[in-house]
Amino acid sequence: MTNVWTIAACIAAYFLGNISPAILVSRAIGGRDGDIRKQGSGNPGTTNMLRVYGKKAAAVTLLIDVLKGVAAVLIGRAIGGAPLAYLCGFLVEIGHMYPVCWGFKGGKGIATGLGVLLAISPLYGLLELGIAVIAFVATKMVSPGSLAAAVAMPLLALHFAPGFFWYALVLGIIVIYKHRSNIKKLMNHEESKISFKK
Image 1 (cartoon, rainbow, N blue to C red):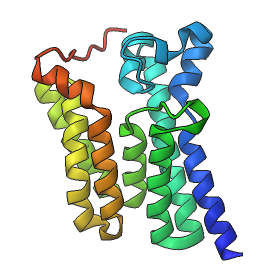
Image 2 (image 1 turned 90 degrees about the vertical axis):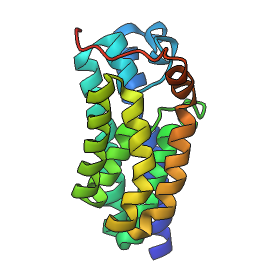
Image 3 (image 1 turned 90 degrees about the horizontal axis):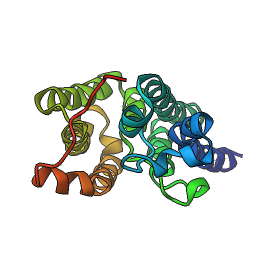
């Protein structure tokens, strides 16, 4: 029975990640033609939602993405303790970035990753958030903060959640890979600065 619940938790975590508030909210606003994947940068995430649909839509996207990360870790912890919590945290991120329900084309994993880390250790999550915010304030761009947090994630895991280290390392590499277009724009001084006018 334990194995059944463990498998169920892993499946639930992955499909929690498949829930895409960016896609659902953008379609609710603009129909199929308003799908966020057809707008702006094409990324179904908070930053693109902010640029295309404004602060309210971005806030809803951010909140749901964070909460699904929290939920996956809590489910894993309730069923199998810390080891399963770490695995479910990893799987919800994979489900978010590579969702089978959306053709394996998902977000970049930042908000959901924040939820995962906050659930694993609030201080771990807050430090990651602090790193991202500092980089954002310094550059007025989101991607440097995301990249800095991706690099810091496995390093901080060594202190706050050693059992999560390898998961964090793999996720950090994937997050950096998902930001490859941003990295190219940063190198060419073409990355857009964020605006909160809407």
